[in-house]
View (cartoon, chains in turn red, blue):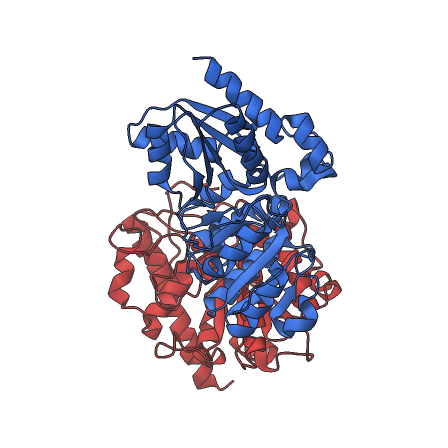
Amino acid sequence: MTTDEEQRLKDLAHRTRRHVVRMATEGGCFIGASLSCVDILTYLYSGWLKVNKDNLKDSERDYLLLSKGHDVPALYGLFAELGFIESERLKNHLKTGDHIYWHPNRNIPGIEFHSGSLGHLLSVGVGIAMDIRLRRGQGRVVVILGDGELNEGSVWEAALVASAKRLDNLIAIVDRNAFQANVATEDLIPLEPIEDKFRAFGWDVTRVDGHDFDALEWALYDIPITSRKPTAVVADTVRGKGLPSISARADRWFCNFSPAEVQMLLDELEGHRRAELESETIVAR
Amino acid sequence: MQIHSSYEHLLRDLVHADERFIVMTAENRAAIRNLPGQIGERFIDVGICEQTMIGAAAGLALRGRVPVTHALATFLTLRAFEFIRTDVGIPGLPVKLVGSFSGFLSEANGPTHQAIEDVDLMRGIPNINVWCPADEQDMLLGLETILRDPAPYYIRYNNTQPVIGHSPEFIPGRAEVFSEGSDVTLLTYGTLFGECCKAAELLRQEGVSVGLVNLRTLKPVDTELLLKAARESRLLVAVEDHFKVGGLYSILAETLTEHGVQARVLSLALDGRWFKPALLPDLLEYEGFTARSIARKVIQRLSEQ
């Protein structure tokens, strides 16, 4: 990746993070999980996925399904930057006059399917990938999974089926931010070694730094790794990435900050001084 | 389209005639045993994974397909309930949910296999309709209409042999009325239609004026027919191989209440319990759902006024 291209992606991700932070007030949002996947989504939508604002209904497009769902502010922020939706529309977050709420839905251009209940969209992705195969299409289906979401048995059921049906046009990307809701994943239901688990289910696996665009390019360059096998990409990320004051903390999952705190966080995002946060943690699950 | 002798033949021809149809199963092939060789890639068996089948069906439907999914009724409606509700119900995708061995048809399997809350669960999901054919002939008469309907449907698969010929005019939301009666109207759906048909004959022999109705679809339900029967018969009897809660008896109560119509109603259903596992004729006898039992209970209730 050229330096210019890398800087372009960093700038895009940065602007997306600013949208996310602005949604973490007046009701709040799942800011930590949203910030952890911003760079993954930024990379995917910057040329890797064959999808853009002009081909959102094209049957030959690539699909991205956000299975963990509650990280949708990242996608909405990115969609605003990419012109899928007007930036102004993000001000409607949580307002009854629009459809921008805590989980994705198809009223927003670019959202392929609603989610919120964990463990659903890998199987939906299996169905889309099977239809692309039936029609001899070239489209690929990317499913973003949370690491905590891997607790759900239905993820592994779908993983078995994807492997059995040899869906090499299906790619699962695990946003491995090491936290689920209120605790560190390894303190509750340990997931490691994740790569071995997917391998044992018949998938090819690669592991990557989910905040390194160059590394993401290398990891995603040559998929499928093996013909007739689905691919899992375990992307190591940091919950709350970009904001040291909230990052990698079990108690900063769902946050509803005051307007003044949002301003401090926006400054922190610019590399200025660390925000002083007083809002109480909300345990929303 | 020619006259079909079986569900499988009709489904095969529909798949050949319309590329939207995909046949799926969670490794339950009783009704579709020969289809893999006949429809090729459009037969998808996902193994014993009801949730994944429904999620994948939603994915296929997003791409314009009409997946016709098959599983044992109890595992389809219970194991995959949240997938049906969330991935099919919320978006209203045209996925068809074919549940086999529903109600008394699970015979000697035991309570794990008894789908006797399926109508309740499926009709409770917005956008999802419910069709319960009375027997194989009734099922073949309605199948193409239901599969081509843009709505998602739960279908209580029923290949039992008919005791009487059915009307070829099939319209969702329209009941099939065999007779009208001033004393009693037997309202039923699915497998027990045959016993009700014979019970009606027994009652007529006793001089009772009997109405007999095969509801066909429970959602949409034939509201006008239910109200008419309530006004014209002294007693309505809701006969079903389903829990008393949430099935036809509940639908009837909701309908009468909503329209402010009073009626005497007798429920013949499973009241808060699972049924005795046995072969169909034996369990009908044991549970009191033979034609003779039904007729006796009706006469008893008629005599109580």
